[in-house]
Image 1 (cartoon, one colour):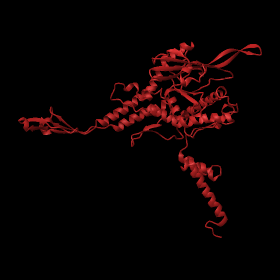
Image 2 (cartoon, one colour):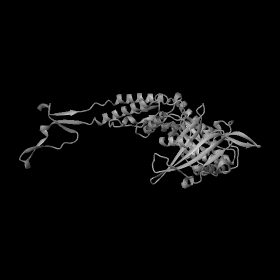
Image 3 (tube, helix red, strand yellow):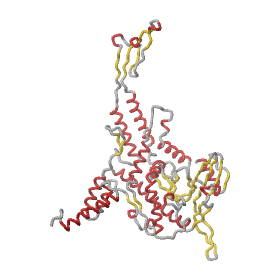
Image 4 (cartoon, rainbow, N blue to C red):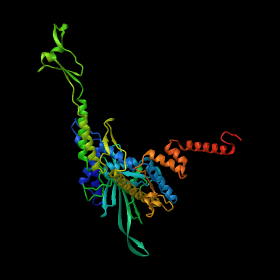
Length: 483
């Protein structure tokens, strides 16, 4: 993809807001979360537990905990709500995890009316930034889409950017800022080349895409960049984010070494018995009494030099330093927690189970709570940008009647659009709170049965109907129909 970025730069005659440093860093992050970090290359004694991926999974899980997004206000808002709901239901947690591992991800309308396929997810490496403002807000980008068919490579470049264009207004020329989307297709027999330009209609998947769209009344780019809330010290000029573990890569290496050494120590601790080789020979009658070596079990080893007759059999029991190893591992985990933005001791190696687990978030875990809240805030901002892009696509592609959309109203707070589960609460705390609210008459009994007792909607309705019928019968005839 880095080669294709260079071609894209030439095709549209633009400068790229990217650097070799960021591309190298993204490649390293990708290898780490894929389970192939550079420190295990060629060293069989060091294996990876891929804690970086676990860190991303944990963050994504806490970020998206019970996430709900409500878009309302009109028929158009209902359509956008369906698109966002499909994303939340099917993809959002995986995409947040991807962003944690690579610094960010682009959420972009696909131009497809079907809500299930209305949003594309573009990973770093599949897009290149062409323009940004002083605040690091992306103002232009080229997206790279590729289809492989047999030995042929079809590539589509989609360029989003703003231009100043002369427009006719009341018989006068006026310079106006418009948003332009350009699409170009190419065919090549080599993966590292764009090849020759072809028509978009030559590829069935791209046949409906227009070569150029000029759109007025657009205030920001028609895609959203979900960026990790960590300062990019790799390349200060880049608007892209950094992986959440980018500041603790050396500690991740140390963790893999410490874990591998603990595993190697356990593997090497098998019981061994050493016996004088002269005592494990037997006479072979068929071969005129020549003594041959007896086949030994794997835990018995023959040794001759240095073994005295009186001490021909020796036992070897390896010393395990498991306690020291676990202490070292937890020390490294504590440093990883701190440098990734979590509270110290957030991740520990359980001595009983041998599993690395995340501790329950408690009231004093301010660092953990603040980090998750920062990620949630970045996600909220990117989803609102995505809703803005979807709204414009309704004008461009679907000719849908305009209408009020609450998420586009700056006066509507995030709390009225987004819902996240409280990080400080546990399931049992939530259940007891819901029971208390039921007694106060401000919480739905049906909702309680579904969320906290495991009933589905139909079962809950039947149960409540039966209770209502019993209560009505009791009021009429008494508890057991007595007069």
